Image 1 (spheres, one colour):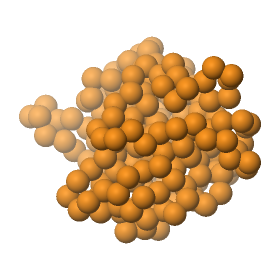
Image 2: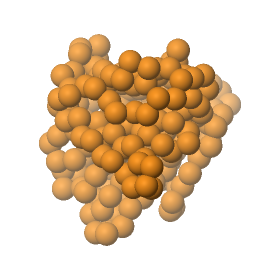
Image 3: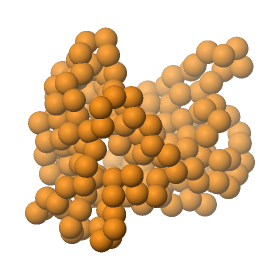
Length: 202
């Protein structure tokens, strides 16, 4: 976000927007790297409605992926239905893990597509990161080792059941989403800022 020619659209593999565009480049004085960060000024979302603004990349030949990003949320709505911030999974849609906030907690939600077309969901509860300050979040999804790991500002975060149920897919093409993977109403307006997004694969 810091190059002189940077724009919100940037060089993302794709962008999906379900409503009015709420993204901009901001220049907060406390940003981890100057001058810019990605700012999502989320809309009011009514009960029964959802909103998405997804910035996606598609790494290939992946056995594990580490997604690192700096996050700051102002005016977080603890009454929002679900605030899903990032998602990592197979590009085919057969499996994914998302990082979601709700109330005063957080969860790594795993979804596996079943052979009959249904979805199996598994929740991996984790402590919620600090929200009103910049926090560097590092999420590793090891599809070869069937394991998750998470840290906030370099400090390991305990995960209730870090084993994942992903179907084998060696060297799969991944889908990596940053932004508002999913925002479920009712939700009051919030400011969600990202900086220093890094995707590492092996």
